[in-house]
Image (tube, rainbow, N blue to C red; front, side, top):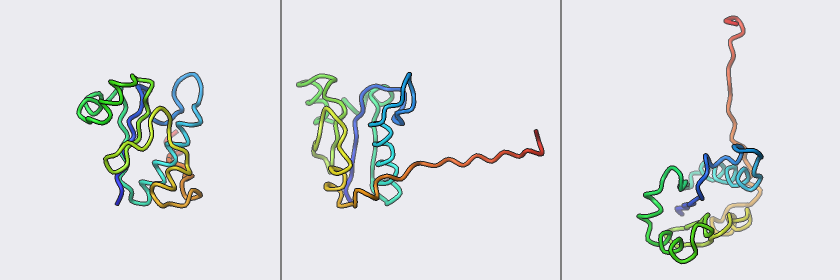
Length: 120
C-alpha cells in the first residue's frame, strides 16, 4: 500500500478551521486525508510547529527547505519521493497517485457528542 506524507507549514492545526477565517483548501485536504485513512491508506501529516524534527530528519524535505525556503511548504511525499511542493495536491492528483476515485475523497470527519439532558 502507498505511503503518503504531507509536511505542512507552521500552523496551529491541520483542520483549516482555526484562525481568523476558515481555509477551504486545508479543510479539503483534511477531508481527503480522513477519506484515505478510512480506506486504509497510510497517511501522515507533519506540522512544522509541532514536528520540526521530522522536517530536519527527512533529507528530501530538508533539501527543499534549504533550496526554496519555507515557501516550499507544504511538501507532499508519496512512497519516499516528493510529488509536489509549494501547494497542496488537488483531489485529482490524490486520486491519480493513489488510484482512488476522486468522488471517494470527500468524506467529512464526524464527531458525535452525547448530552444527557437529565443531568442538566
